[in-house]
Amino acid sequence: MFYSHGEHKVDFHDNILTVSAKGPFNSQQILIYQGKIESILQAVSAPWAQLNILHQDCLFTPEGEKDLCASLKIRKDRGICAIAVVFVEDSYTAIVEEQLGRMYAMHDIPYGIFDETVEAKLWLREQLKIATKK
Image 1 (cartoon, rainbow, N blue to C red):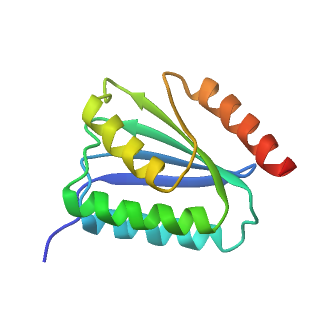
Image 2 (image 1 turned 180 degrees about the horizontal axis):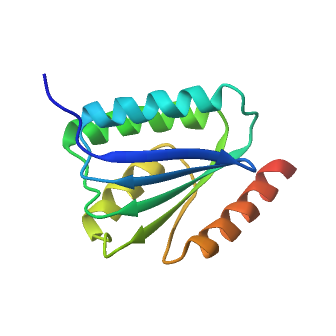
């Protein structure tokens, strides 16, 4: 049995799921994360958006990436309309951006990479307006 690697905090307000996370992440951590998200989303009606605030090294193990990809399918089915990613504390790496972009594109989820949380939230609110009009 493996121990989980990574940390996350999850909050939902004004149809935006905010995830503050510190990696790296393995499969066990992704499964814990998905359980928290599922419990929050039970009371949410579509559309909704997600703000990921990433701290430190947020690489995914191959198994963690596979599990997160499955998690994204569930979120897509439950009405997610966009994901914004903010890298803080020098956490940005091209590899993490590539991993996330590949997973988001696979599920046709619009996403943006931002330097500031305020900028990311403004973009998400615009995406929510667009999705609500559909």
